Length: 250
Image (cartoon, rainbow, N blue to C red; front, side, top):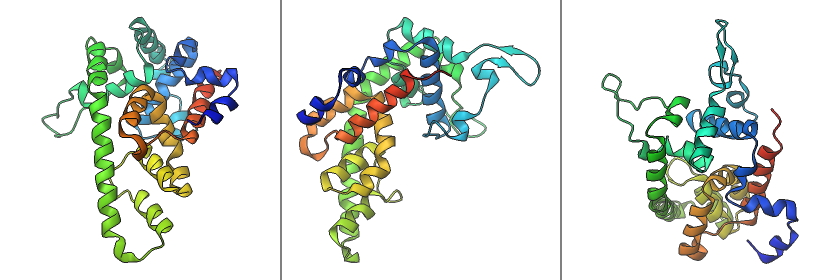
């Protein structure tokens, strides 16, 4: 982030740049944050205003279900468990959907088993979290290299279209069929190329990812230098995301 941008941030905004910002969340706010991250990944519901995020689920969220059974809030239980280990809640959730969870294909369907909230407080949860952290740096490095390779390849295969450079850049970076890249790398590559349209398209998804994996992305971008740097837009969006959860009242 540019020094000028740092100077523009007030003291209240600065605190949201601390990777440990989540420690200031109340139990209710932490539960809501964990719930959002879980549904975001399991149901591909990025927007916190989406139907999937807004729909009440008494068997997870607490309250009385359709059968009149009183349920407790599973997210609050998970949050207390995460805080017991001084872990990062976003990383904790991501870990349980990753190869670190060592999910096995079911024999009958040959598909991976569904991850449920109860998985996030199993006896192996801390081990899964620590394994995920240990492999995160190499995973993000692989994501970067794969994105870099497929973007470069797509530029070569679209050269014959004779598009103006700015249109070709947008076409390639927004190509989700042939280009294998996470929203974070699509956004930072677009920033490096000066493509505002692609930057805006992938900004929120990139910021949500960066917000969870801030330390790892910061370390990676220092290694790869000018090829991918964290943009002012991602920093500003990350602050807004964290403010959203600190201001959450249910």
